[in-house]
Length: 224
Image (cartoon, rainbow, N blue to C red):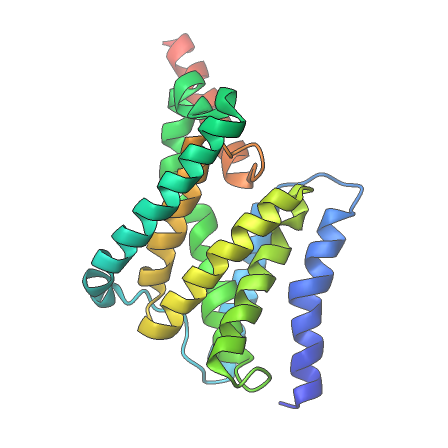
């Protein structure tokens, strides 16, 4: 596998694909595309005899103290900023649509966080280590690629927030080798944003899925 091929693959997956989706005239859910990309990444890792995505839950307990401290600090800052600058948005989803909010809390980690962990942590940091050999550089590339992908939401708040979060998630994966350790933090912060009132900036395919499930449940309840 040449460096040039790896570089081309990186550009296609992590630059061209998000840009193409962002400027596509068709509005489709990003989830099927994300899962196709995750399947390709899994298959490619296996063919290259690199570690395939394993959950690695055994590493989670040791990360809980530091993860809890970091989360409390960041969550406090986010909630304060929302309260200070956009108070009407504070906790808008759980207040206004509690059933939808609960569905998002369940569906988001499974349908969104997991495939993103495969693509932006496991695959990127294993596959392209030869292109970005310095550990810190690899973390930064992972984080900025993760943030850049969120330009599909057509606002720079999503890109900035996710790039910042991507630094933490990539660092956690690099230091633990555990997808679970990085993914549960990813899920935690994503759920925080939806809960605290920033969901409008990261409106996700998961929300559309949750809305569809909510509609089905309502129709079934009405029929009964």
